[in-house]
Figure 1 (cartoon, one colour):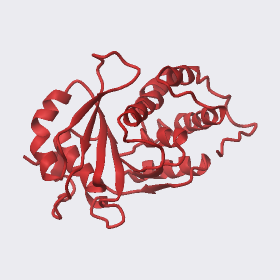
Figure 2: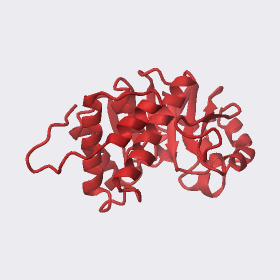
Figure 3: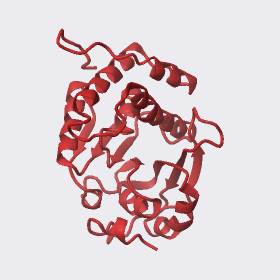
Length: 254
């Protein structure tokens, strides 16, 4: 998986937290997968601060907040019948690659597109794809509003993923245009989810979505702080959506 190390590479990070946490949610990782996550961790450690990839850079934080949270999303989607392993998946606002890259490392047959508007972050993602020898992964350096209008990306995906991108009313407009009818949007949300759901119903309907469902994120308590919001797509997104860059966030659909 492109994870060979040379003598100048830093020591292999201790990923026991990742290994044990994944096993606890029913997702035992092979040694090849652990090696791939170790190389990914190295890349994050080398460039995380310089490129402002993520504010969480310590080993425990990366394993819990980035790796395990991404894998828990995958388990939740698998249990809901939305992730079997060969779907077309788009990760919108991918940043440092979460949740898309961890999911690809465990479900290698996924066909993944990582969309990231910041050129330096998109370049980092391309390096990750190259150094981990990930096949079936493309990186698109563009805003979601623009990418969602491209014929090769619009209405092409079984799943659209988003993490810490925008409140749900804006997120509906940014993500649903990518999803085929019958597919779904999935996002990890925190304590403000009930409020977001209450204000997002009209935007979801207008973009072709059905009523949102909520799923428990595996590995946390039943009343834990995080939930997965799942929005099925039941109709086409109107041709005039998404609107021009900036409007979904500043003037959410009502």
